[in-house]
Image 1 (cartoon, rainbow, N blue to C red):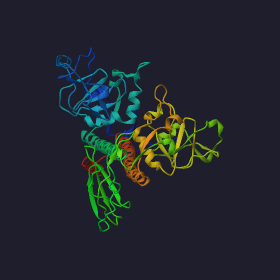
Image 2: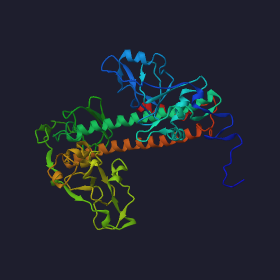
Image 3: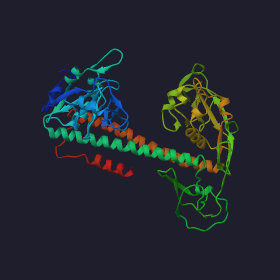
Image 4: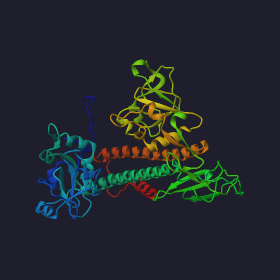
Length: 498
């Protein structure tokens, strides 16, 4: 036997879909489905009110069926189209055109019609629906399934070839159910994490809207009085609402922020306080940017930053260990900081770490790709940087630009572009430097929390992918009475956080 020949374990066998357990079989999809059919093929009769949902390929994603943005057809057309067969709870849907091979389980018991861009699979009693869904969504099956697409310009899945698609099938339905449950639990965890991230992002957006406009003041900057009342170290108080609060905290106070559904913020301060001054709250004043706190100013960026643009890569020698050199595509890495680039150069032109870097032309401006340089760096001609003077906190400026958006700075009449003439007169609200830093610290903490959750989400996706490869090929077998307690417990943890 050749040393390169793959050794198949004793309890496994080689098949057209790969190595699987001996007690599994390889079977065509049509052999284990009662029906495989397409949706509506006639002219669509859409109605605005009182209609029946028409599920299109855009209404299925990530294993789920969504009615959120569904369009509706007349009841008369629905009854005509579903007279002989219709999709029902337990069926699996697969998009055959547009985004090919996107799958969803019908997990609702309600009336709806299916558009022609969707293939409907109705499993027999021998096939578990969730197992079928997991299998069709697996990387290996997707590769074989989409490989059967037809069409020269707009590709689509051929339903006849799809019917002949071979899949591995555990002989015992209970094993199918267990595999489907484990993968479904992993999907539930991913969904819970995505919802938690969306919630945290919404909280950050609300916090930015309040703090960066001065509509809500941090407690330690909201009052004028020097009067104080002694308090013990570690005292915790909560202030909810706008600038008309009840108390002022010293600059050493740690402040945590929570946003409510109505957009208001709650602050919790603790530790580091020598005194708790009380007195008249600070008011507001009109400005070019609207109403702002009376101790804030409005300044143009030209008074606060040094502007720099990059040079063409043809002007540099690239080396393995030198000054980091950024192109626009490198701004896709990371959430806040620009710290990863494959390009290193020799140059005396260096932009200081902490400077704000962003695109100066093209569609990337509209994507708001703003980052902070982690190290002393340089960049190409499609990027520019702003280096703050001692009146402006760099992370405060970063958050102001993120909140306001580069499209509000740029000339977007044709090809979006940002030049010095757009930066220099651009107005921003300018709190005292200590308040800038405090605001930036709170928002940075929120960014860190979101980034940690995103990293956890990415890791969970990798684990799920590996789990699918193991379970759907039988390389790892599940005892029929087992459950994945770790996944279930993590689901509960994330659900509680939501």
